[in-house]
Length: 137
Image 1 (cartoon, rainbow, N blue to C red):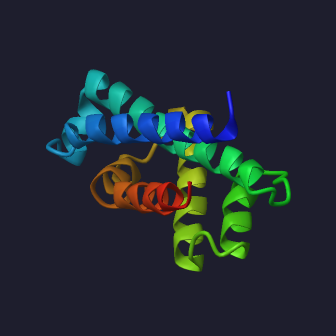
Image 2 (cartoon, rainbow, N blue to C red):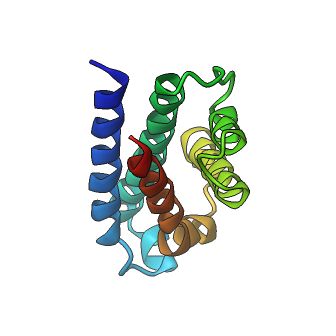
């Protein structure tokens, strides 16, 4: 599979996860924390949407023959250095990587204020990133 195909598949996955996440916006922070079914599904789809975004950046970097990142965050830094994304968007995406890591590794201490905030206010950052990449492939 070519990098181009991988990018298209990952963008498709991101869009699918974002569509699913829209269904969870109706829940309050308390409803999310109190219902383990909602909580588990929401955490998983937030993780998947962020991971698929990361997985979109990596083959794009390779496709464009940019320097190879050594960390997940560095991928977004490279895209900013190469003028693919703005500094502001890079900062937002790096924060999403941190959120993804929090969901993946600190699941026993999840802050549901943060989860609710990402759900309600940060999914647009992923949409903006995907829009920028899609314009350039």
